[in-house]
Image 1 (tube, rainbow, N blue to C red):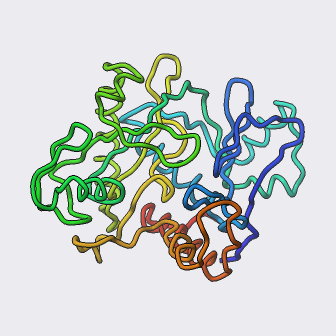
Image 2: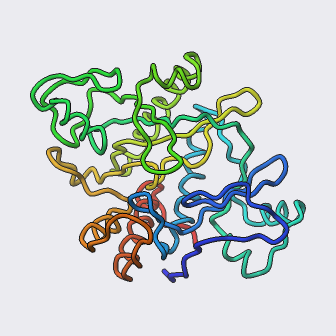
Length: 313
């Protein structure tokens, strides 16, 4: 595969950015939003100075795959990732596209409906990993049953163990720093009791469907994060869906509870940064070429393993 230079930022003449996140540049096209997923990568809540080639295309195309797969369960904001149609919409909205810009946007742009986002992250966990494992240990879960965020978990579970059933653990959205896990009761105070119950039910249904689909290709979905909004009164899945940035994917063939599992994500970047002596404060150091290349391969492999086909050229 030909490695292209990473796209770190976009500017579309004639259009103003609606928002700029850690990874996405979002443009307002009147009644729709244009989401452009760049190759930016962050670790420890700091954006790295160099990006990961094809990362934005993987996230966009994998989200497209899942949005289409999950439509029977929930309305999504997804309209299209068709480059020609998106280019037409950009021009109609007053934007100007040079051949170079059109190439840069290819495969990484998605058109979506506008929705009023709920101010909570909807996290579903099928395995005991990440922040939940840390909280479980701190609460003494290795010795006895514990209650975390209103959910009772049996004692004696090991790291990466499969939970008795998937659990819904909402989190607050943090502008900076880490999101904070909260209980469903606390989340109900933010968005309303009826709404949070709908979000929980929908999130778990989405997780179960995605976990079953991923398992067909030998991938375990350890946990994932969804974002929802309201569009014309309907709860709508927005942002991205089941990507290596929002989910923890494991290879079923080498799964072994009792320790952390290798994930299809930016672990190479985190590991290098941990060993580099960096103090986890801006500015971040430049990532070495081998770390960039291995991370890019991991993202492409995630797409190939989940979808069952290579990333489209």
